Length: 226
Image (cartoon, rainbow, N blue to C red; front, side, top):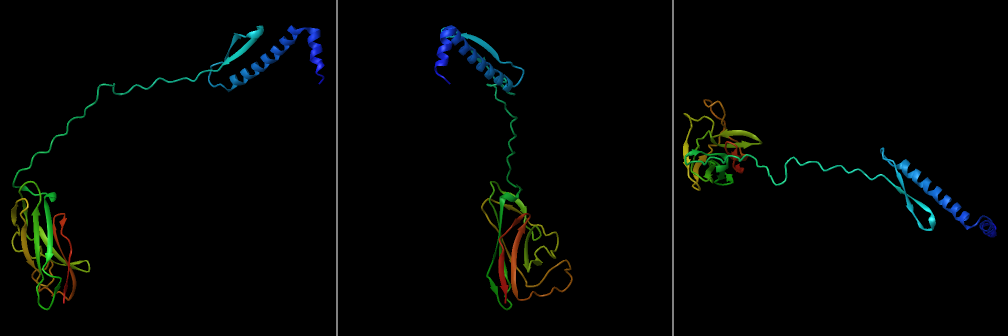
């Protein structure tokens, strides 16, 4: 394009006409921008144009877009400064001496006198119950309630609870830290529900002895008959 063309236009039409054309072009561009912004805005808010006086006698168009709506904060279910308090839980009643023992009060242990019994040696065991609770408590430590079992291959073959004469109840007052000790011997024969029959003799091999009191169990004692 010839650079003198615009000079000729200015000379013919005058400087005022020249700048009015430039302002018209600029205004048209701003209108296009405003229309695009209005089309992208969401909701029913419409963009507004605010005329603003500028230098040189021209009008500049300022486009104001809709501001985002801010929802008010949700009200707290509990006003500040007023803490909620739950109902106090009742304190457990204090236990008294002589009450029945509970599982947490007792420790049951069993210890074999040796690991190997030869010939006609009778396996012997010490069964111990210790009260570790805060009070002296009572428990039935008879041969049924406080039981010792002998098993082999996962099968129970003898128990102190088998063939007990009478009720088999032995109620004891257990003081804190004072062990109750019972000596038990296994006569090397099998026991069961038929106490009138002549019980068979246990064979040589490995056996396991275990003491039980309710849900409490002692450690396993592995021993051999040779």
